[in-house]
Image (cartoon, rainbow, N blue to C red; front, side):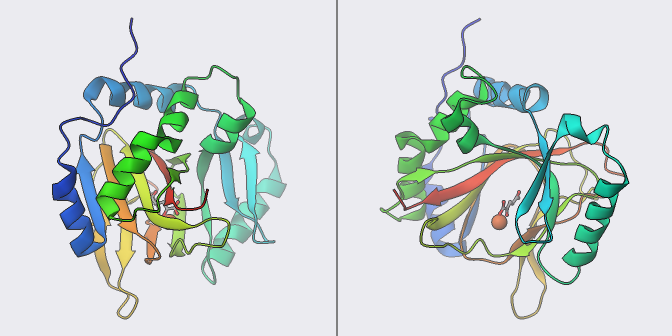
Length: 244
Ligand SMILES: O=C(O)CCC(=O)C(=O)O
Ligand SMILES: [Fe+2]
């Protein structure tokens, strides 16, 4: 069977979406890939990524625990997670599964010919950067980084604004949704917060084959996935960047 071409859906009306981005600093683009391409990426995410549980550690750095190590994990991990949840009420915190696509791509892991690498390469490449420039109007965008994320019931990403640093210069955040079935009371929405009132100005349900792009810095979070959610929230997330 021949592989579908990795490219954005040629039918996308980028000018139309650029107007929305300029007006709102946030735009959602459905059918971002042609269906066979989206199905291929979905299948890779559902079946073959070596996920690691990641959460913000006490020292402010992410802790990462490979999925297979979780089976045998004992009370120590449970205590670490309980402490993270406790801290997240006072300060920034998160817990979800991830797979760092760019570092894996550069290191040839989990193996050199893993099917996710062409996806990472596509997102790092010129077609996606050019799309980012056209969409945001920022000509300095030179590439996009990426990580795959999986949220189970109770996973969350606390309030933050994606502020850039000198080494990591973020123009806009993007998420590529690959959640195929979601109920609107299952949580997991990407939430945008009014900094003055705390009201949620937008709450975007997890979707499939949908690209969301938003200007940063901008306050946002991922709502905790409901304990009774019957599924996982899958996406690829990253930033259009101007460093490099
Ligand atoms: O998954 C999302 O909807 C947002 C992710 C995000 O905000 C981040 O990774 O910084
Ligand atoms: Fe973010």
